[in-house]
Length: 282
Image 1 (spheres, one colour):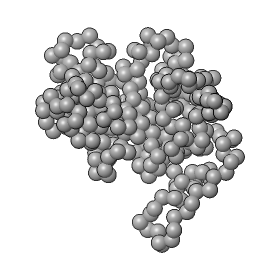
Image 2: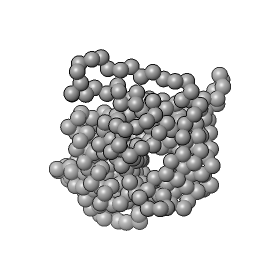
Image 3: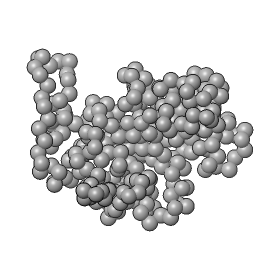
Image 4: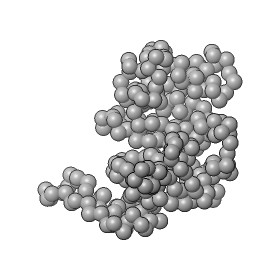
């Protein structure tokens, strides 16, 4: 990772006012990202997805996002105008959502949607947009790109739909990709295929990747570093290859809950949460 980070976040807060008081989804987290693969893991409700959305300023009202610093490649994301953010989204930073069925337009052909994502940021002729779209479908290892280009979203499988979303998000050639649980709806075999595609594309293009997941084993095997979140706070940041040596009780608890082939058959440990974790993080 270079000395100057691609993304720097300091003291990020995301809160939602409700009738019963303010709900804090993210509570003052800080981390940086270079051109590397950074995993963010934690239980449901830990603030992982909200962190990703806040980077792109996609937190819906009445959500309130504040930070001491939220900078992408020298750009202050908090002070950027709406027009600047429209240029950044997709072209500089892309986000792959969890389920393609809710991200793809059901009444538009797949190829038209990929080409539209390209032409939104590049002034090219329709023929060139189609050529680039077919190239991206090949890049995500779709065997018959011409057929898939003409297909509607309901005509493709879940795994293929996820590949199409990856193609759509990567066609503008962004510097940062945020993948929000992109493999959770897929079976294990297809998961590995999608991860291999992401790994190849990120490595070849020298991009940064934020991989949001609740699967510790998956993140440890795929990412360079791991951010462990609990109740909107960062508990620990460690190298993925050294995740087994993590020190925080929450990380240790998550690791102990994972089934292992070489276990002696005893019941899995139950994670015991300490209320103090909600008040103290990195």
